[in-house]
Image (cartoon, rainbow, N blue to C red; front, side, top):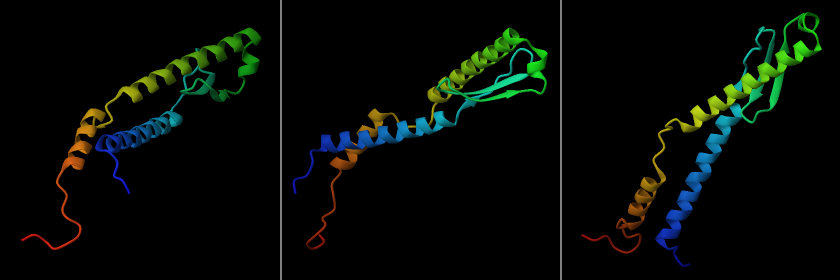
Length: 127
């Protein structure tokens, strides 16, 4: 069997590394939610980083306390605030240093491993 060119092996290793990093980022993003109360504090939505409303809490008596327009304002305000908070969380989490070695440095490491002299795997040991 022919051996792969060193550049191809480095490119394949980089592809695997990127795949793992992207999967890790997606996992972190999927766990993020924001819950910001409405101006009155009686409505609390839960919004994920994709801007989707995943839950909505209405305090007891909220529907009786507000008219239709006021209740709609409370809900929309809280959802907007929660969406903005979710975006902030996402931005912070995705831009913080996760102690990943830069890919260029990783490529140099892989290249050095490939180019390093290999011990013989058959025959007599050299003395």
